[in-house]
Every structure is written in structure tokens, then in C-alpha cells.
Length: 187
Image (cartoon, rainbow, N blue to C red; front, side):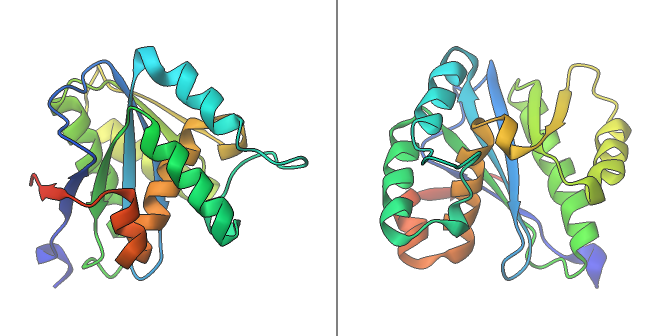
């Protein structure tokens, strides 16, 4: 029963109680289901966070993609992400079998969460195959104060933060705990 499937929100790396005036960088993982991550960075810290992530690029790289990095690079990237003033909101829609529906429900859930928390800007990694659905989903919410942008990951290093969190959470085990060793459900 797809309609009764649960979508959970996990808030990791601290409480989101102090995240208004933040930007939500959004990426996903489709490993073993569907997970959407919104990495919340305070507006006053966005430029610095992007610069810290850009410093991690190797010669010839146009972006970081966590799954393509070797073990030692993953450790280095994760250390940097863990030092940033970021809160990760993880929407776990693994129980929804259809990935299109999972994305729709997860994106709607994260958008409503952001509105509730006073976050009005979403930057979403561009996936042309989901663009129409994303626009419809966010447009249907009719939140005039919610601004969203789709862009390629190579154009915004803030998206690399969400990519790292999504990969770590989806892989579970020690990776999930290296990202953060405490979490709470806030559904």
C-alpha cells in the first residue's frame, strides 16, 4: 500500500531550532530506496562553506561527488563537512517503492519543514528527469515565501555538502555515525 508508506524526517548534527535565515542545499541518494537530504547552512556562512568545499577539489575536478572518491578522500571531505555550521535534515522515503512518488513526497516534506522553520531558500541539484515534477510539487505548495533553484552540482559547492550527507546516511553503519552519532525523529 503505497499511500500508507511512511516518510520519516531525521534531523542530524544538532537541533534545527536556530536555522531560520539558512539556505537548504538539497541532494538525494537512491541506494537501497530513496533518501533526500537538505543541508541547512546559515546565510551568513554560505560563502565560507562554499569556499571550504571548493578547497577540497583536486586538479581537474569540477565538483565533488562523494561516491566517486576513495576512502582517504571521503575521510577528508567528511572532516570538512563536520566542521561546517550545518544541520542535515534527512527525509527517509525508503518504504515508498516507486522512486518518483518517493521523491515527490520527500521534496514536499522537506519544503514544508523548511517553511515551518523559517527557511525560505532551497537549492536543489538539477536532475532534468525530475525538473517538471519538482516544479509541480513545489508550485502546488503555494508558499509564496519559498524560493527554490535547480542547478548543477558543479555550479554550487553547497550541494556537495548534501551529497556527502546523503551518501553517508544511505550507506549506514560507521559512515552514518561518522557524519553524526546522534539523531532524533521530528515527524
